[in-house]
Image (cartoon, rainbow, N blue to C red; front, side, top):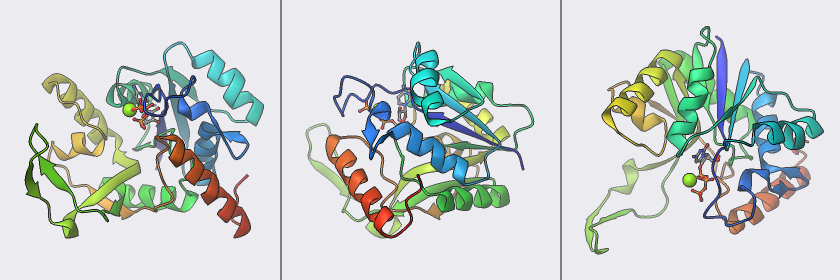
Length: 235
Ligand code: CTP
Ligand code: MG
């Protein structure tokens, strides 16, 4: 199975509010993106890595993030206006022989090699696999005036994380159809789901957080400290 990883890291980090995109910020001594790329490499299941950066950042990212940390990727590509466009930019660069495409957020540095392997294995078996966690809050749907319209039954709700892994042909078809239909989704799975392909959920981890705010970065530091204490630090 030839597996290509697309790492969308082309966001600006508006909610984080730093002067540089959050994926470049240091986390326990290394840029967030370095942790992400190392975890993918450590899985031993990825044959090709396509990193998607903000347009114009390609050379800088190689010189300032990848090279100093001894990391190589197959291509650094310019991203698009939203996450979906950035993943699509990666998809266009995926080699023709790819069987599976794994998409993993650049801003999820704490993914473990075990989770990556589990997602790849599930997608190899079933065609599409998404790492997810059961929702612990009660989720309500509101109207435009914040009036509750509905409370969803929590037992059936999952929070989707990444990695998300798909047969390459399914993901290409899904992105192309979404583009034609003008459909914008916040993950890749929804694009595949709307074509009717089955998607299997794979257990994620509460530690596989997406760094969105300063508080997430602080929590990520804590988690890495406790991993080092447990002897699981992956530096
Ligand atoms: N991403 C991307 N291209 C975009 C927007 C987002 O590749 N145009 C990436 C981000 O870099 C991140 C992942 O998609 O790795 C998840 O997005 P998110 O956490 O929303 O990051 P940002 O969009 O950078 O943050 P914000 O929404 O706060 O601006
Ligand atoms: Mg965003």
